[in-house]
Amino acid sequence: MDDAPQDYQSSQPVSGGHSEGAPRRRRRRRGGRGDERKDPPNLGLPEGAPPPAPEEWKPGERRAEPVRQKREGHGSRRDDRHRGDRERDRRSHEGGRRGHRDRAAEATKKIELPAPTKSRKAEDYLEELGGGLLRGVSRSFYLTIKMLPESLRAPISLGYLLARTLDTIADAAKAAPTDVRLDHLRAFAEAVKYGLDPEAMNALRREITSKLTPGEEKTLLEHAPRILAWLEAINIPDRWEIRRVIFRIAHGQALDLIRFGDGRERKALTKVEELDEYTYLVAGSVGEFWTRLCERHLDGKFATLPRSEMLRLGKRYGQGLQLINILRDLPEDLAAGRCYLPLDELTAAGLTPDDLTRAPAKARKLVEKWRRETIARLDDGWKYVRAIREWKVRYACALPILIGLDTLALLAHESPLEAKGKLKIKRAAAAGTLLKARLGVISQAWLDSMYSRRRKRAGK
Image 1 (cartoon, one colour):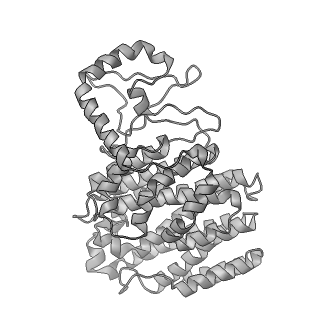
Image 2 (image 1 turned 90 degrees about the horizontal axis):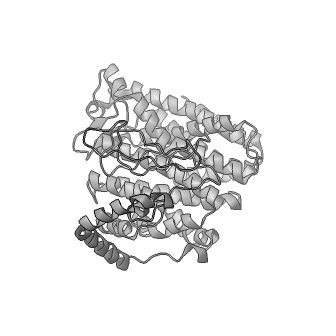
């Protein structure tokens, strides 16, 4: 989709009309006549939730100025006639603004800002952050990244680290309540769009990072300022693609927190459409992101199928991988008050979310239904893999499906709701799959045979 960008001034829901007595919001022209800024749709998100995913930015199109700059009186010349109003507002709120500036100055002193992006190249950040840090948060993904063509490593590694940072914030339930995590999701998404905000980074460190137990996730959040600095050093077209997918991921995670709340009460998604929306925002959009990046960097030699079909298959592929995680983690999510099996299907089967733990055997048919739906989406993912021309990219895309099918084969023998422990592939088996796929990746027939064997076991 190549629509013009939609640069949102606020993450808060905006109604289509104007309530009585409320100030009428001005619409500023962005470029040519008739091209006016549009308000984001009203999704009913509470304060603290990231804004909806923006539309695609087109290369060469001017970005709108950040909201905070406009509020501080740094707008365009067309705003000159409104400066008197802003000056009166500024004087009337001088006390509060002075306190805000003092807090911002204090926050700036606390955090060590990254080196200016002009003095560093994206390759420097790839060497610094795309090595040990990336390997620590995703060992298997790190192995596939190393096989990618050089031009793809930086944007895909950076996109992954930004997404994992959002994921760590959203999952930090022991460190912060839901409303605090929502606020930090929004703040981090805005930092991805507008640049590093020292005050927001200090708040993240104080309210979440400092409360995490030592480990890779805590290390990841400690490196958040440098990850954001890397984004500013990367080339503009890749930066636009990363911002687009990160906003969609942030929005999906915000919806997740809003729908399930603090976990004190076990809740389920209300309908299948909500599950489809969630899997698209946090994973299907990644398949589209990967497709667009590969098309640009491989100069039209990415795939044998049309672009529209690769985008569709990439979306289905990403959703299939997310469904594997959902099925495998059903017991853990239920313990945390989350049920991703839709309530409309549970009700049709005569079940409630609590029945999944009290009488898990009754949910076998429903779990199996979604296991087979997952296989169907991975089948589309394999069509995606087979269409890829570049063998290194084909290897990177084949591995998650092959390992995912091994996991689905385990779920075919034993329902995750009835298993004594978490069902997962042994490291030795995963390493064997990595090696075999790497040896045979040049031969599509070899890869097809690996897929067929695993597909047969998973399809039982």
